[in-house]
Length: 183
Image (cartoon, rainbow, N blue to C red; front, side, top):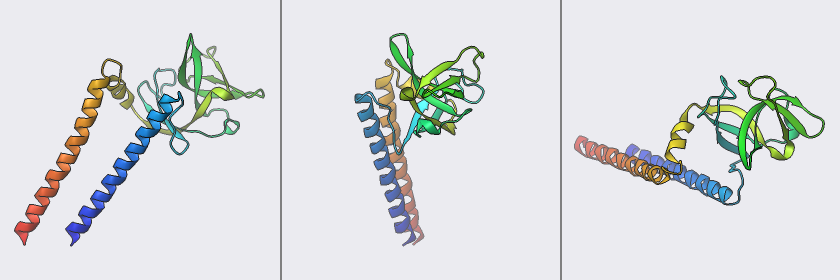
């Protein structure tokens, strides 16, 4: 009886995880198609692409940001925002060194010289860093999903999912056989 309950619980959580993964995927795809930042429950995930925030945040770190009202931002908060770089927009993460009265922030990277500052308008603000990061994982993700490696990345992702399910099936089969042999 315990084995059956355990199997039901594992199956339940597997389906919950798969459902959550599908919802995240749909959110990301929909947001990308609409040129928006993907967000789930007012949180977004970004990769740090430069060393401007070292030592707190390093290139390749994955960070979680909370999409709070820009009026709630204070000095020393780390925020993520969109900034112009030539003809394109890039997402950047810096520390707020001053909250201005004209609906802007003055920001600077922790690793940047004091004279390099950015003025960020509220309209360009995305969210505040929560303090949660996964170090260096972004470097691996960036490699997998670069333009040249997107097909390779998708194949690896699908293979990992299939291998995971097969390992689960083998373990379940082994446990069932062991239970039968004990009885």
